[in-house]
Length: 232
Length: 205
Image 1: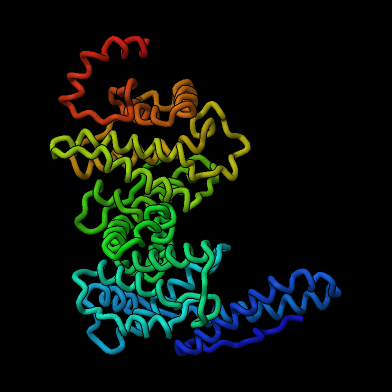
Image 2 (image 1 turned 90 degrees about the vertical axis):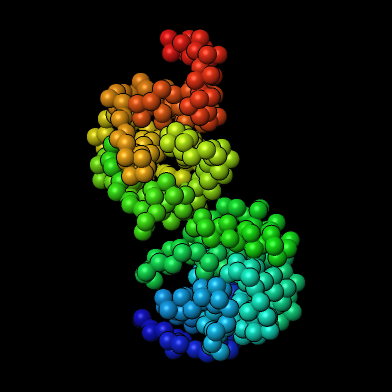
């Protein structure tokens, strides 16, 4: 018998709710891994129901936690990097686009990629003096340095987190790729923008050693972001 | 060999566009589609490996980029050769299927990946020369000669840098077989020719 979705998800959610769902989704992932050995002892029918329930939670979480964005949101986020904040809503829209990029890059990749908290990221960026940055890439570098210092990416949003080396690498590369994407030339169709995001990640990954080394300081990061944004 | 039609964005020249990953990937995908249509070979492309190739190529490109504008034209062929070297080395393409009646004496079936890489590099080279330097590329008439492709595959297997010289050869130019991975401007090439002529003659015998 075919059932409809177990967890219907509204098309749009507030950033706090998305953070909560990201947490639930992460719990489902961890639970599935942790209970794998014990689940093998259960009868096949029970195992199957257990897997379906967890996978429904993961799917619903993934759909709900990827904020929908359009070309105008991307334009606002890119302008935010270029000109600094011009409107009260700019930070929220910038973080929404960043969260979208984070989820897109997370999907389909096996490597550990921690959960991104929009609420905390917005608070962190709000607290930065964004208007003082001399260029878009300098502003992007300041944001990257600040976000990686704080707990905006973790196992459960907002909780203290000591990332493993693999998780630290994943956070740095994802953040870097998303910012390269926003610094690069814009496309005129959403599908093309998604493609450029993928390419920004692939290029970041291709130059992983240099990218990770550039997190040693804001100036080095600024130069590296600028360099890759030009190449994408 | 199938042409590709990727054109520059806005008022950018082709050689400037080719230094952008999104143009490079689009052009390469166009080449894959066109070659698959022409030959019936089905390819799969690893986007990460292709991006790795682009990143490596840009580094090599920047490392020997001539400072004088009058050398830009000569650098086009060399840069295309560097691109071929990197594609051969990184090998981002896999052959998924070939037609059952494929004639393996034909270069497109003898070495389908190599054929695709050469077609792409020759096409980009031709596009740059045509759009940015108003010059036509004259490929060799014996481009389909299997013996040449056999030698090409064996040579680049031993040393991928030889791909640079082979691309010049395929493009109908006079390649530098002695030190193919070193760019020499027209003037330096003339001087170097005095020292290398004897060796080149021996190689071409």
